[in-house]
Image (cartoon, rainbow over all chains, first blue to last red; front, side, top):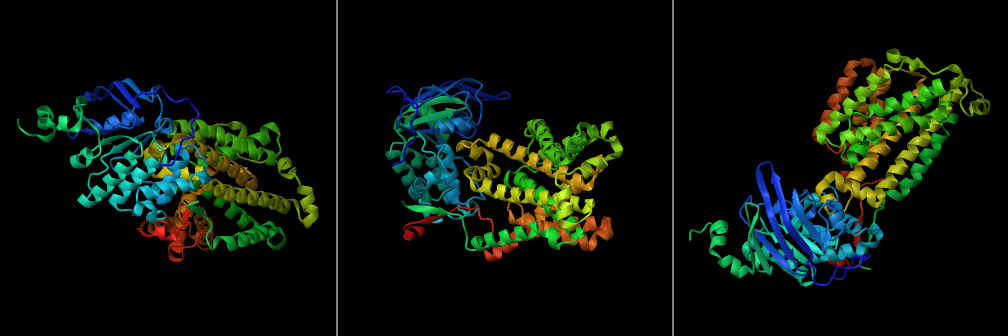
Length: 254
Length: 351
């Protein structure tokens, strides 16, 4: 896509992973929701995250975006330690996210939702982002809804708005939280096509999803989470063939 | 260019002219209005400004405070204290009222922002009660029974002699004229300032924070900074208006200055009846309140019961208030802030 983030800091050394977690831990009381999670994500890759309900998938996202603080471990973005940074400054550093349950700014129009993200996410004046907003709305199939209040959108359109708002910040790294959940087969396919074209444009993606066929049609690597631990990480077909994963995730007796 | 953004509506252009005419007519009110009318207009203007600041907090910022009387009262008392104890001129002391309210708002926000929703509302009320109790122990300004503004301070108002000569009126009337003009300036500045703010990208971000704070943070909005800014601005403005109201009253007591009915319940009523989260709403709301007060105030407590029932009825059946009903029917927007996207290629408007 044709949008550029104004680059003021020198870029990281070539080959630096865009996202790097090492030893990330988080507990809610006695419950360990993230237990020494470590992985690297190379630039341009799409990583899928699967795991049973309560495995700590959304929590992991909140730790990456800074909506939750880690108990231990570090989160690096483009080689820079962002562990202590707020959600707002991590957005400025290049993380865009969609929420599992769509969180539109309900009283604003679709265009205004995207406009806030484009203007604040890239720290540009409102007048400078209009064309970029139109481009993002077109990519996400929402242009004909631009002046509608976001509260009036259908579920599919809300999910598209989540995607559009995240894309408007021109993220280096896009986090998608169950964006295909609850959609019909046709809607799901249309959304997957949009995501695939964004990924083809060079965006790095981490995607949590229960709709496996949607996920595996896009991602190059799969990470399995269980009780807050990384159970396996690797190529999707290898992971899905593993007996341990099949037992835990699919509940198949082997 | 693929398109552009438009905020103006068809009605908003002629309305600017109408608004200018109304402001000019109001500025000339000392020429055409009786002293009673002038005092009524003073009431309407000051209540409108208070309502707009509460509207900024609750309607745009999602910060439903029921402790704004803390800032009215402290602003008024700071003005009285500065006049009585320091001998500062009353009009200069109004500014000190605003600064005192601002100073109180900083620790208040520090505590109250840790609370959410209804807890925030109750927290601000508790702060207001604490301030009221503290002020009622301040003996130099009359303690619990209050005090009056010294006569020489009231007669030493800036420009009093000129106004007396210009309109050939007595001192008391000239004082009303000066304070009325001040109220008009404060109100015009409040409404236009609020409108200008809402049209900036910060105004848009404030609505985003109100709708969903987590999502606003994750697209790069400084949500906490936004809330702080709005709370401090509202406190400063509320303090200024409090000082102005009690300068006009000439007498102050803790019960009057920190009255939750006068400075918060009436303000609620104005904003909710008129339409919360709009600039037009409070303007309609204050006129409704004034009309009801003129017609039914002699019924005392029953009048307040009726106001309460009316407010409940409106929240249940027309949650966007009278202005919400009007704008839904007609599509009117006199102070438009919504950004509409106009595409260069209209065929893209279709799916």
